[in-house]
Structures are given as structure tokens and as C-alpha cells.
Image (cartoon, rainbow, N blue to C red; front, side, top):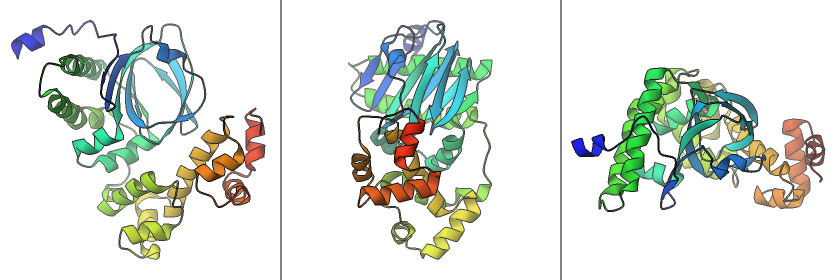
Length: 291
């Protein structure tokens, strides 16, 4: 262990990208082609933890704009809509990307509770002590992932991620906290179900059946504990993805309606206009995208 620790250069973070299957990617932004990705919204399939160590960047998460500066932590979740909007020439930092499958394997306690906080507060400040801790964690995780000869490499990585979760993210994230009663298991399970099924299921009856509750009781419970109705949670996921897809000109409106499991384009148009006040075509025009 002493040799392992001594060989890690804590004052010089790794710069090369390293991947462990499709489940984990570690990379820094310095001279990284990822900084030149198209400036358009995309739905995330991985959770991504980003530490900004210098410079600044602008981004949208769920179509809400954020300005990120050193030293701040960005936590992006699977299923969220992410859009890079540019960065300064001196922007630098590093990131850890985790697949949904890998997160499920970790079986982290209270993950859905943490999700509800991070969903609304993806950017948070880091003081010098916590930045040093994050740098140390990244260096150790990188060195562990790099050691392909270790037969227990994946298990070691899993446990390091757990350590970061227990003592890292929950401590760094100091955004608004919801009332303790929102930590109800039913609320957590509902949010998880919505994340997994909103593309196909928009009616509260589906979620109530999955939770063995009546729709009326589930509606009241979600409203009481989150301040938003169950229908609002479902609709917000659907509309966020619809807006992101409409800003991408590679799909026409009919294809988007099919992608989101609407029976036809007309039904999708009415649903979207009721929620946003604009038809899909009008929304596209407002964003400078050809219909």
C-alpha cells in the first residue's frame, strides 16, 4: 500500500483518458477533443462528475443555464439533458463518467434521495480542502483503473466509488435540501420509476400500479413530499427530452412523436403546446431550427 500511494503524483493529475469497459471513463479536459464537441443538447446515458480546476465554462442542464468557474463541482445524471455552451481558453478540469448499469451494481444507499437534490442543484462550490480531497481521489482511482494486471481491479474501483459517494458527493453538494419526509421510500421509488419509464408511460395509473397504491394516494403523497404533483414529475421528464430533440434538426416532428411513444404527431403537438404554450414547430422556429 505504501508503494502504491508513493507512486501517485498528487500534484500532477493524469491527463490521458482511460476506460474500463463501457462502465467507467476517466479523463481530463486539457487538450482533450471532448472540449470541441458540438454545442447542441444531448441526453446523457452516463452519470458524469466534473471538477473545474481553472478557467470557466457555460452549460445547460435540463435546459437551465449555469456558469461554472474554478473550483466547482458539476454532477450530471443519466437521463438529464446536457448542452455545452462554450468555455474559456484556460478551462481545465477532469471528469469521471459512470454508466447506469455500474451505478446499479454499486447499490448505493439512498441514491434516489441524493438524485432529488442533485437533479435541481448540479453545480456546487468546492473549498480548497475538498478540492484537494477530490484531486486525491481522482489520482488514486486513475491509478487503480490503470492497473490492468490486478485481478480485483473492478472490485477496487467499485469500492473507491463507494468511498467517494459516502464522503464526497453528499458532502460537496450543499444546494437546497428538501424536507426530511421527502426521503420516503415510496417517493424514491416513484422518481426511479419515472426516470426509467417516462418515454413509454405518461399516466399516473402505471406508476401507482407498480407501487401497489391508488393513483389518488400516490398523487397526494408525491405532492406533499416534493411540492410537485406526480403528473408534473412525469411531464417534466417528457417535455425536457422533447425540447432537446426539437433543438436537434436530425429528427423531424413525426419521428420525435414516435420516439416518445405518442400515438401520432397531432397528439404530441397538443401535449407539447399545453405544457409550453408553443407548438413543436413554433418551438423549433424560436430556437432557429428548421422544422
